Image (cartoon, rainbow, N blue to C red; front, side, top):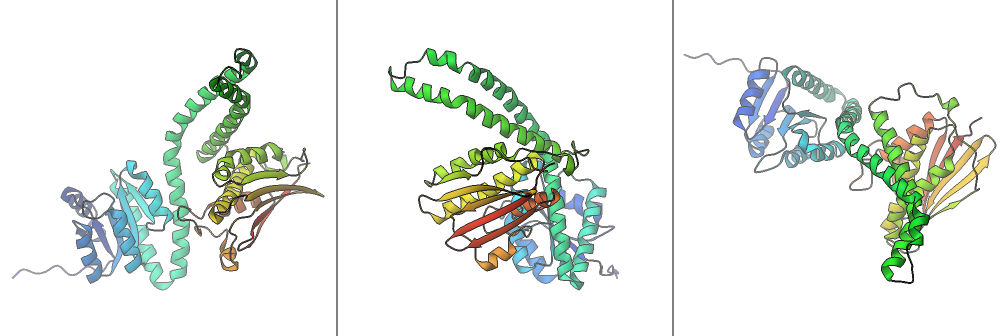
Length: 391
């Protein structure tokens, strides 16, 4: 008579993959340390989930009958306490980001995985699941922190790929700069009265220097962001040593977001002095904040669906502080929504991550400033930044 091995009592890990070889390798590599079941397709996985208490679900993203993303949505809805992870190829970066943003997964594992790394991840997941049985609030906070770390990990993977096209942009904008210097000479060769093509060419030549400057500013901003992601600026200046002229940054943010307003017959305007005092905030961070806030205002105006909307940037110098207000005549927010603005991962937009406003608050606070939001449904929103003036 054959003796059945005793049932394992450790938290159950379910691995879903339509390729048999992958399932065999996964189970043989990890069965000594974890209680593992495998499923050849999402339907079989759902049957196991219905019959057993599963602590961790690890799924491949690409499967014929149902994608890993679709399976994760069902698991999140029916068994929200189960920890969810994906095993995927680097080329699937878009669904990875979507799954992270929507809270479908806590971690991702890139193929081919290393046993030691995967074992560590599974150990963390089973412990987090057990912690959640005692305190759902603690598990939720743990997962939010993990999502931030995971997004950071994804961004570091993309840095190398971003550098290559950025270098191409740098080279091309230098050529554009040379062409912009030749505008007076080129204009002499054109007669706007000759034809519509000549007239249009003359208009484009007039716009070329400003367009080139805007593109260069955007490239410099991107380069700073990428360098920050790679940790190149670990020895950055302390806030007290920074002195940034905010006016060019305000105008750049308006230029970048102009296209969003043109589509709905709205406009962006600046209301303030022609010269502003320098502030104690790095140019890259202030650019990031202003583009975020002006874009949010433009999207709120567009969501209202009415022409003649307006986004205004108001600048006021008050003692040792510079006050910047970003006002919009958009749809506004209810008191309930307003209370949650700035909470990581909270968003009212379908494609949003909920990190934009939270990031703005963090950057403003790090510079020694303050940020507040006031809004009323049907009236609009005002975001107020109070920044310390540089000595």
